[in-house]
Image (tube, rainbow, N blue to C red; front, side):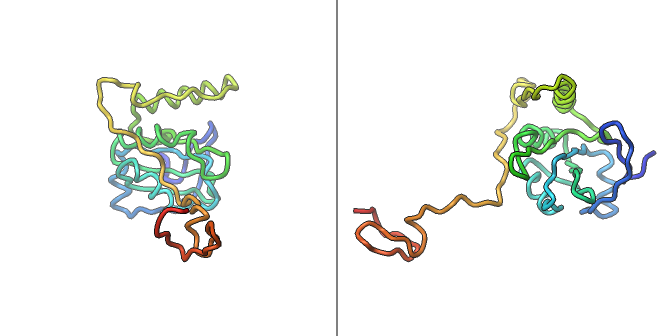
Length: 186
């Protein structure tokens, strides 16, 4: 059996140390839980960031970031939660500008869903064919299994406030705001 820090990535063995969020009890319970591999992780990403991002899709049991932030591993409580995270984030969410993250089941995951295996197979085949992977929608994968709506990923960046609502902004007629508006503009 491989040690928890020994992983096979891209066909080559490597030993990696992790920043771990779990305790010994959580590690034991996660041995039967699905584990997702997350590639293209930003150097600013840490365990709390991953937990916040992935918990939008279900119960996260554990999150670990490899030293050097090359990749991360996220352990979910259920396959359905892991599938929702893959459907919402895989090649759709960017931690760095224009670099989408790769979210697939880890080679060491004790459980892998049919959906996850299909997404991984398409990703691998697209790489071999030197083409972009085709999206596989979770809702169309199993029409007999009703699923909720997959929400957009949470964002730490607030949308910019319109200029008219900023404190000190000049309004029509020369008035200056205090950060609040009291009615419609003339």
